[in-house]
Length: 244
Image (cartoon, rainbow, N blue to C red; front, side, top):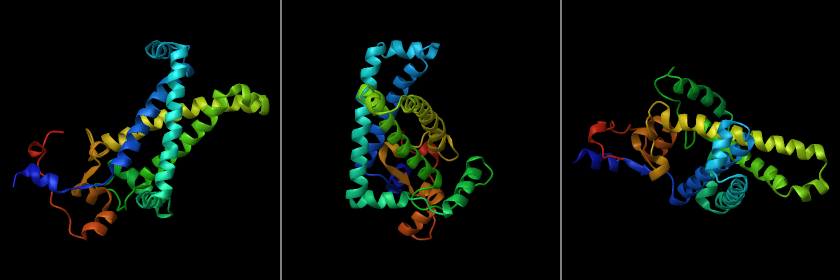
């Protein structure tokens, strides 16, 4: 059998088209919101002026930012309905719930990413870091939506909110966006694409598929539920694999 065909046969579908679509919309939306927000946040710097020019000036920047803010709100509603009212979505949400064992797993996973251990601990469907990223992005998005709505409808908000709360909202919205940007485009990119075993690109976010070898290495408890205790065959040499 051709090695590339064998490699394809050893892949399994990990995420559905619905889940991939949600991820892609979130990725694009947060990227645009971060860049348009950074243009305003750092408008007095060289980076801010460059971004503002690329985005078409202050008025166009604001329109783009608000459009994708609406997209983020719609995506949040989409994900909520999926996670609560579909069987698979609810099952995924239950797998994402934090557990006491995640603390020890978190420490073990950090040792693996730092090269201190050859293999990560045995996890189920999601690792502690994946859970942390999920809840961080979810809570961060809700905070951005809430504070963003106050700033968007500032005239109405100022009529019912004290001035100090409005000022705090402005600070929180700006810095929360900056922190979310750093976490997503720094930490998240490293874990998903640049960490051991994933460099230079882990393609699950494109295809939704994962090899049995990687499932065994990173989600061994889930692998055992699906395929038993027999380890998968070794990955074929990279030169024999199909091009991405």
